[in-house]
Image (cartoon, rainbow, N blue to C red; front, side):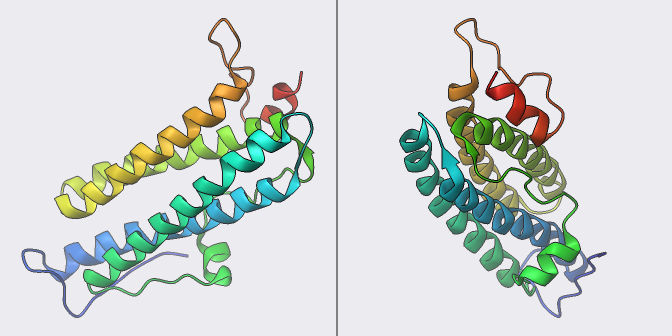
Length: 185
């Protein structure tokens, strides 16, 4: 689904074409954040094993923070003159990634897969930070703050996957499924 926002107005100092580009970037971020908060709840509900309580309790604050991030992104798009599309059908049609692939599984398996999710998300946010910085420092600043939080959440996840020697058990995994398998070896 190609995005093409054409707002009728925007914030002072930007023209509507620049705002349209920013709104499109923010829409993709909104989809990613909505998907992430649902994925995190899925993990919260389906984690098992000896690390259950640690992961179960670690995930809920991330869910709440990610929901807040989605709200900030949607509100920034509205301030720029855009419309935020937050329905499941629009998210699924527009996303550029596959659905989370791990069901009921060991806590470490979920964390291995979640590390892959965070890596993809963080890479995309970094690209959005770069693109928005050329046009609007306010939008860029919003994304930079979210990037810091997402990187911290990934650090929490990776702390469970790190060996005493400092390597990630899932270091060479390319997919969620591979990472889940490698995490429990």
